[in-house]
Each structure stands twice: as structure tokens, then as C-alpha cells.
Length: 234
Image 1 (cartoon, one colour):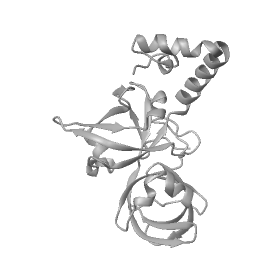
Image 2 (cartoon, helix red, strand yellow):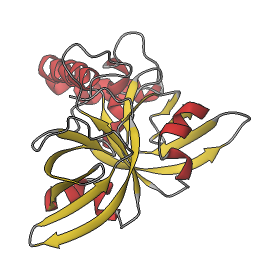
Image 3 (spheres, rainbow, N blue to C red):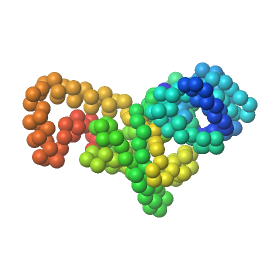
Image 4 (tube, helix red, strand yellow):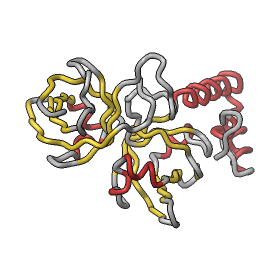
């Protein structure tokens, strides 16, 4: 498990491709690998990877299967690319963000960036079917960083997050431009709540669902609004 608090930025030292597998050697800041062992987990831009070898001067190797390359931005990495990294949380560790599994749900795209004084607001375009799990004031993980959704537009399938200077300093977000791909992990408790409510609605209403959906649409709402967790907007 991870906490969504990015601990460092690592660089891709080398990439080796083999049939069905790509191996990365990552170079970490000094001290990052202290106590790290083969078999340990490290979140790399939000993707949980296993250490396969330890190198000199805070470097380590990781293997990535083709399926993971298809589902994440790791396929885009080149030698010299920078990524957010976090070591697995220890028992009893403070969770400054929210619990993450390191299993990416989908990739999204940076649609727009606004830069008011001392802040950055990033609008992110999302595959529409995933918007049912994204609500204003809710948590979401972007490239391994736990962030709070500021605004969410279900009809246009986007949400926004605000990045403070400290977040920009500790992550790679400052280098992301419009069109950049991002790894997204939705908040699991929100997913369970939404799926449970939707399943209950489907089971109990059955043939009445089309009529309910039509009624909600006339009011500018949808079933996703009914399945919204308490205390969240969007």
C-alpha cells in the first residue's frame, strides 16, 4: 500500500526490452534506497513495481509486463525521463494523502492549465465511463500523488485539481503540458460506494430504470448523481 505522498523524483537511467517485458533502471536521490530490498514495492508514477535488482549509488531495476505498459504511461518513458516515486508504506505510518494500491485504473489527458499567482490549476480530461467515480472534494491519485478534486464536470468528462508550490517542487507536475498523459487511480471507497448503490438501483428498479433515467435527464441529472457518496459534490 502507498499513501499518495510523493517522496522523490527519480530518473530513468536505462531501458531494456525483451520479449513481453521491459526493464527499467531507475536512479533515485541519495538515501532513497536505504533499507530497500529485492522484492520490495515502489510506486513509479503511481504504478506499483517490484524491485528486481539493486544497483550502486541508489539505483534499482524493475520489470514491467506488456499489459502494464498498455494501461499506463510507463510505455512513454525514455532514458532521462523523470517520474514520481514513493516507497511502500510501513505499518503504523502516517497517511498524509489517502490509501493507494498502485493499480492504475486508466490514463487521462491534461486538457488545460491555468497559472494564477502561486498556484497551478490543471484540468484533466477523463474517459466518460470513469467520471461516475470522480466528485468535487473527493480524493484521486494522479501519477502517484494524492490530490483533492476541486471541480468536476460529469457531462464534459473533466475534473480539475489545484497544485500548490510544494507539490510542484516535490513532483514532476510542473513539467507537464497540455496533452500530457497521466496515470489515474480512483479512490477505492468511492468506487465501492458508487458500484454498490448502482447495483442496488439496478436490482430494485429493473424495468423502471429507463423511465427513471429519462426523468433524471430532464432535470439535468443522472444515476451517477444518485450514487454520489455523502458530502461530495460534482
